[in-house]
Amino acid sequence: MSDALEQAARVLHGATSIVAVTGAGISVESNIPAFRGPKGLWTKYPPEEYATIEGFLEDLAKVWRLWYELGDLLADSAPNPAHYALAQLEQAGKLDAIITQNVDNLHQAAGNQHVIEYHGNGKRMVCLECGAQQPIPEGPDRPLPPRCVCGGLIKPDVVMFGELIPQDALTESEHLAIQCDVMLVVGTSAEVYPAAQVPHTAKYAGAYIIEVNPEHTAFTSTITDAFLQGPAGHMLPALLAQAGVTR
Ligand code: APR
Image (cartoon, rainbow, N blue to C red; front, top):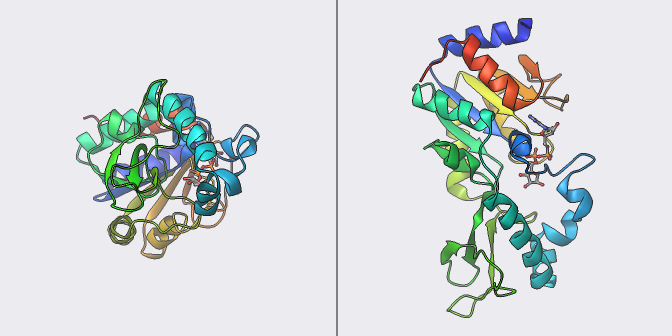
């Protein structure tokens, strides 16, 4: 048992308000590739072409081909023990919310009720004209690109680079970061703002930061109080067991 795990478990056990911030790393063990790193999505699909609003408007069909492919991947993916551990924490009445950068819907699939979709949801699409939201179509004969009945352009309901974070997500995340006494930061490279600002806000407000990641990040040697180095699918269940969290 590592000292960090024992200390983190003790703090978690005594916490009155816990908030989790998650990134793509928590879904790696659900066979969804992360964005950065040697096999990251952005190595195969340059983000400037596929993940910016300019790139999207330049070639709708190309970007939609990627999101249809990602949608099929998401359709076949399932929550892993890390997602279920956060659901268990919520069911035990110990987790106030998850602020997720992920668009894979796996926290909801694992049973978490209070999930803030900081970067939207990759299972939904939204009309840029009328704002109508609908599920992204599955199956072989999907329109490329999809069109809204109002004639407007439709995009995946995810926040692309160059777009603003939904105001309600920003506001609620800021409030939760300020009031929590423990923040669990799981599977994020801490590279993308404003999401990466949330743990800094929590730290500044006095929260204890528990970070779960196989690699060190910009958080590890600056704001992290307990660094649980390893895959989230192993570390989170171990943390809850050590903290005596049962649903
Ligand atoms: N368990 C925990 N963490 C893991 C695991 C694992 N099994 N495997 C990898 N990781 C870590 C990596 O070490 C890395 O630090 O997950 C992190 C993934 O980093 P990114 O791919 O950069 O994902 P994320 O931090 O969520 O990216 C933020 O960038 O491109 C945008 O909108 C996109 O939401 C995304 C945002």
